[in-house]
Image 1 (tube, rainbow, N blue to C red):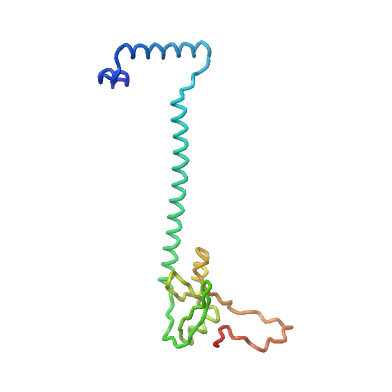
Image 2 (tube, one colour):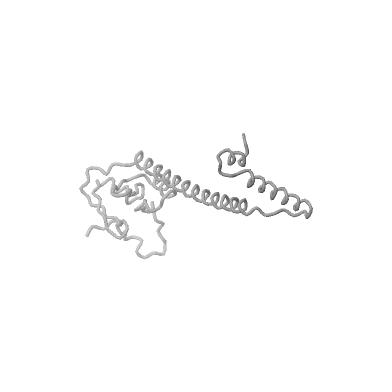
Length: 178
């Protein structure tokens, strides 16, 4: 393949005299470099390398952002799959079970058996968007590892009773109906 200089000559962009002068200047510069032992700085090459470094840094940042977004999407898909596979039925609910979600008090109608499981801590309420689902506590712990903001209500399984507590005989219901 012909050099760039020869291609310019064939295209008529440069005449022979200018090409000859460019070669002479190039040879003189090489000769001076050999004598002095210093290398001349090619500004265009330095600028190109700097631009290449900046582009590589920007590409690394964009790749990191894409990887983080893909990881977050994978986590949300895992949570959705966990909820879908392990959701429990609410039963033919006639009992209103109140819980707080954000700043609001939400109401969920459940059966008496499901209410007992919720109060005992065996079932946990998980909210994904507008959907409210009940999942076992083990699954809720796995969901909380991935995103704790989705797990709404976790009752403690059994609280230890202090022996010196004068009100130990009086049990306070977990979900008061007003």
